[in-house]
Image (cartoon, rainbow, N blue to C red; front, side):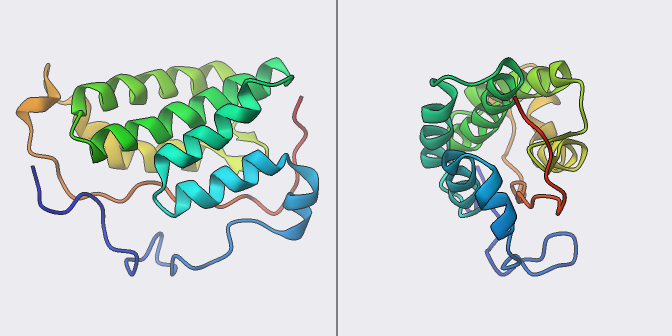
Length: 158
């Protein structure tokens, strides 16, 4: 395995410094606190903690689409957590499950997250897990996990 799990915090994402605010006050007012807190944790590389916060919301009374969306986000976070603890097979399983749930959403934007962009970042970071029958056979490359930045427009959710 590589000595470096993720790129450093000083790296640029899409040519922009990482310290750009991922959401606005309007997002904070419109969306559940767990969703916003999970974004902060995820962007900080605290993938297990992001999973916990999003799961708290997912386990509650939420609509079917939000439940599916949150489960996909949880599974994508868990994929990175599994890589942190040296479990590439489990990471691959979570990555493929997240991709399947995003596909079932049948939308490109949910809760102001551009799902096309997020999935492209996810694929750039994790598609190497799908290149061989057993990902434990691979040397983990350096990669940057997705950075979540919400679109300015608010979107409905159930």
